[in-house]
Length: 583
Image (cartoon, rainbow, N blue to C red; front, top):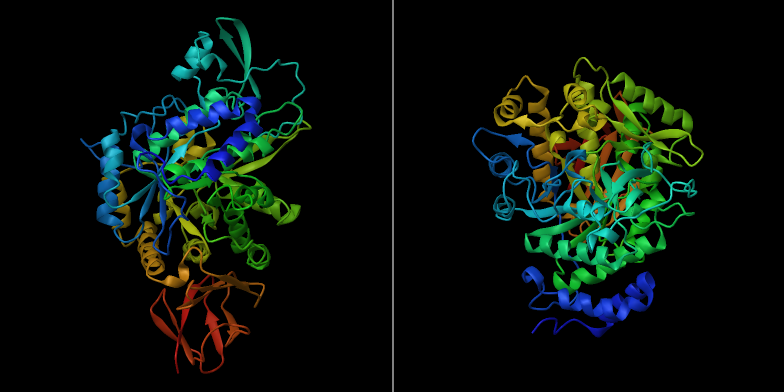
């Protein structure tokens, strides 16, 4: 019988959340939600709430379904085969970026949530990834494509979708609304009822859904169960911060939005307690981590401040800002984790730098991006001005010196940035093109007219293999080093996502992080030299929680560092993962 083990306490909590959102409709909506469970075979045996499980072996690969393509083969099938052949032992989870039929934004303007884009393959190709990998799916929850059947029904005044979108009089004062883009907030649409203006936060082709209508929420709950039935272990809530709209407010991070996340957090353990919620909120740090709630919202939150802060530090040879930020990260519950990353399909967001570096340093970072051939996207402010929103550049080129050539310094900076990201407490997410140091795709930008295309290059299998197999190509060096880091990380308990983390202050040019296994069985000291010159430090490091030792082994090189003279020297931009070697 369904839900025998679901406690009345959870059901009552969900009804309370529905009451907060929809008032007197709550009891009927709670019964409706209860009756949904079991659809698509999800939750039919009943579950009790359980903490999610994760470990040091959890590494997420972020990729488009057609990042690699080969003749006469569905791109999803090619991707699965390439991962099996070339990345065995490196990752255990694959985030396939939106693989649904879409009309713009490389998948994030969804036409049909229940279908796979035929250009990529079929649901069978998606499910085949379950043989060897867990899966992450995007729930593009804030908006839908203008070309979707939902919006066509809205235009034709057909129920229930005629009430799925937010109409607004263009004379309404919306000046307080926080904007992630510099495009108009309202888009004119000709409907069967005449001309209407609909809310479009991101683009005229991406029409926002009206969550004040409970039918919209329940449609998303249905999609959520469909994704879980198809194998999703992590659900990424895309653009969740903008979900609820109330004119006269900023329409970002509203209490109702947080309540929807809490409702999803309550709902999932009822049907699939192993499934994790990840929120995507490219906003200043304190706003971003608010989506952990009081332990009742997301299981994971993107570490959005990490990518731009690391780049700034490595480019300026100053680790102080990274150290100051990292030592103030909150200590999370066992069922919460940061999702650490440096690059994704989007650009490097710079709003998360707010309050972390000064204006002069920020301007210098922007200038460097332009020098390296990148672009800067802007958002519109409430006063009508514009300000930088994200850096459109590959992370490898962001850390470069010369747009015309790859240098050893660029490779060293990049690999150290990845070593830091992999060492930090949390679960790492790695964008496919970062694995081998992809460079800016200027042809892609010229072809699409979109700045984000600079970091969305797709590859033929023969082209990709030619790069990573060529000892003279930088992609070969980067890929080999990345493989080594990932295999080491996944083999050491000290890198458990929930293991303790301690930031050490040694030098302004050095980032030092001590990681300890949850059962204290292992300790690893991460050090990165942010300087362009060798850096020597006294040994042992003050306050290090190590047993007495005369030397240390660097896991990244498998070398034993002789420390008998009481010092340790790091090469320019070198990272080490040290474990004690007893005297």
